[in-house]
Amino acid sequence: MYFTYVLLCTNSNTKVEEFYTGSSEVLSDRLEDHLAHSVKTTKKFDKIELVYYEACSNKTDAIQRENQLKTGFGRGYIKRRINNYLKSRRG
Image (cartoon, rainbow, N blue to C red; front, top):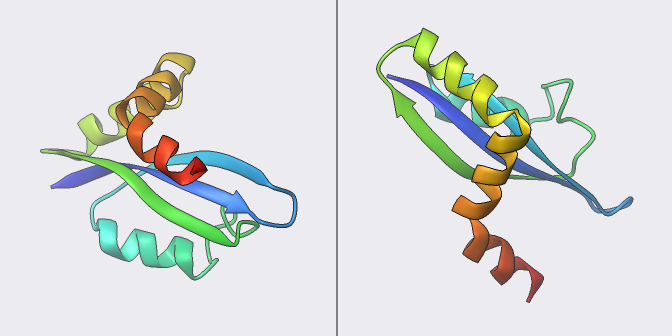
């Protein structure tokens, strides 16, 4: 299986929150890379949470889904999909 995943990354100092979307064959290993700050695009964030993932049968489908989720429509889909989680974080 291949996975498309979305992380919610937060920088506590600047109060910046961003979604990071990626794909990987071994999701747990890739998440460990992000948490260890060994991924260039997410190392500036001190809080990294896996908030969404999907499984795909092959690598090409996972990469295509990753690219879809990086569009405006895709970011909106993720926000709607995890809406209750985002609300619970705000208190």
